[in-house]
Image (cartoon, rainbow, N blue to C red; front, side, top):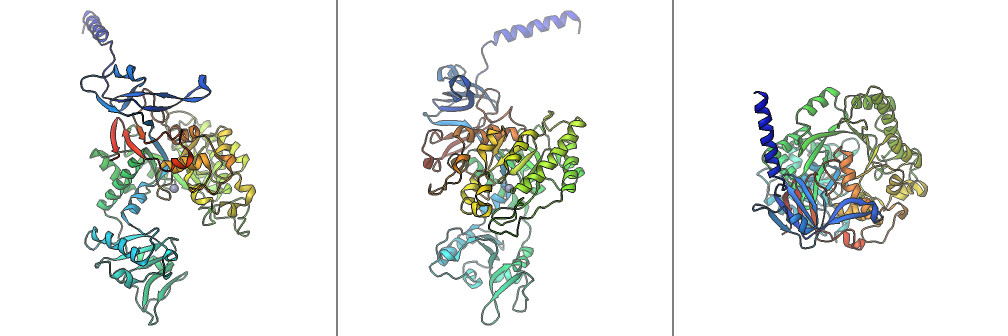
Amino acid sequence: MNVRVVVLSLLLICAAQAQEAAPPRADAIFIHGNIYTGVVDKAAFNAIKRAQAVAVRGDRIQAVGENAEILKLKGPNTQVIELGGKFVMAGFNDAHAHLSEGGFQALHVNLVGTRSLDEFRERIRANVASAAPGAWILGGGWDENLWPVKTVPTRWDVDEVSAGHPVFLERVDGHIAVANTRALQLASITIASRDPKGGKIDRDANGQPTGILRETARQAITDAIPPPTHDERRAAMERALAEAARWGVTSVQDNSGDWDDFHVLEEIEKDGKLTARIGEWLPFNDSVAQLETKRKAHSASDPMLRTGMLKGFMDGSLGSHTAALIEPYADDPKNSGLPRYDAPKLNEMTKERVLAGFQVGLHAIGDKGAQMALDAFADAERAAKEKKVKAANGGEDYRLRIEHAQVVTPLQVVKFRDLKVIASMQPCHLLSDMKWAQARLGEKRAAHSYAWTEFLKRGVTLAFGTDYPVESISPFRGLYAATTRKSEDGKQEYFPEQKISMDQAIAAYTSGSAFAAFDEKQKGLVVPGMFADLVVLDRDVTAVVPQKLLETHVLRTVVGGKTVYEAK
Ligand SMILES: [Zn+2]
């Protein structure tokens, strides 16, 4: 091409651009809303800027503003969605969930809250009716203490409603289960079976197993249950995704745990059915070579699905007295929990993985667990800075995370800030834990547990999630817990000085979670250029009395400009 032709074509391009001075038309316009943008207005005492309308083009937000202004972007093919004054905000980004587990749980028999043996049996019968031939019927949550006759169920009670399916149902505490006759047969549990070490097979007067299996006696049954088929895995994932969409969750930082689940997600994406953006965590304990293979398996720039941080475990849980504490449990003075690593090994593994460019998030519930993670992070960050290793987004902050961070010392909070460690927390846990947390910790330590105010005051980034299915994936329970520190009935309050404002709680659940996954330029605010991930609610969560928060319903969930859920 000669110079003259180049100049000529440049002129033509310029002319074409001049003609297109009017902005391109929107694909969709959301109008007459009460839109909470998430943007802090410094000129208005840090209030959050509101808008009336949003224009969407492709999968991004094109413009945000007043109705008249946004309507100018309407073209002949623009879809107009009337919001009728409803509250709109950026979609929720759940920073910690287990979708596969949640989906399986939802497909299983849920016996939580059954009020009688009849009701227990009715729920099993309903599940059996829709099960594939011969499939195992699994589930649990029963508690005979809630029944008029407080005796545990037997295999004969279950046999009558199981139509030949093997059935295995955990008690609510997860230590006892009931199996039906078919399940006992498949696990070869007979009159001749001996109790395993640490377990018990309940028997009737004739020595026949009754179906009740305690502790390690349950293992024979779990060993006999085949691993889920591909179709079951997919059904579970789709169920969990539907649950996320129903609750306005547009991004999930997911720890499904099995690489097969990632393949299922890829398949769902290919079929155009992925309704939330997923960052799938990888196991910290995998070798670096395995991790690199998994990282390479899917494009890191796919806006809907990619692999995310490495998840490791420092300790257990507070409820079971296995969270690692610096001082012993207040209600168990000889026990300070169970750390799962020794420090040199943990430090070495963390460093190796951070140097390989992985983000690391360590589950730590007790302050000893947090200390182990912080020490490992300090070491790894130092090494990474020296070697000029880039983080996942090409930057130099590695955004190492502590998952849960339920019990911390004030000094550790300072350490979080200095190392720029993210506190990835699930405020909804407090609703369940407040009944016994202070007994476990004693007052002094409890005052620094679930320490949201302390973290924010020190400038630590909070990322909120639910730990679904340990808790429901509903973000509204989390918003309620974070802003009230009260039980769901409002009767108990837990160290209210640690409660945060609704604006802060929403930020932790949107822009904070986005930051924790290196997505803060794409997600978390309703501003032009970000993904059009929006949620329409039936009430303004910043303006209702706390108790009404728990009744919030999602009217519409939008991911990349497309509606993925709409309330009937
Ligand atoms: Zn978890």
